[in-house]
Image (cartoon, rainbow, N blue to C red):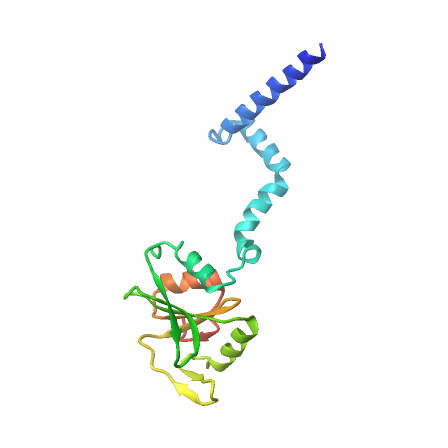
Length: 184
């Protein structure tokens, strides 16, 4: 009798699982709605946390390095084929990093060893992005190929020269608002 009860519970659980997996599709049925809402209530913490991680994903998985940024940038719609090559920048910012090999996207990623180095470099860039204090303490005026937009990650700075609303929007989504550069 005990085995029969366990078997009956197992069959009941499987049939409930099968029914609940079909319920979300027909949303007009009141039974589907109540089981859907009860599963939402049961999974309430899971549901809200499943929507929250999408919003909090950058906090949980920060884009800490230049290579992390490149990987995330390439997930953007239309940016999958953009390639970046390693380089050593000398003027006006001395750093190693990456530049976009795509002729339609002028982007440089300056890589640093620490967040403090990023903070120091951010302080050296004027709010408009057209002048930068160099390592020797002089200020260099820069004529970029297009309006500059500076964004910062944990250990890197991204410079995008251009005015594409799609690129600027995606950079803001990934890194937050620009810290220097032309008006958006």
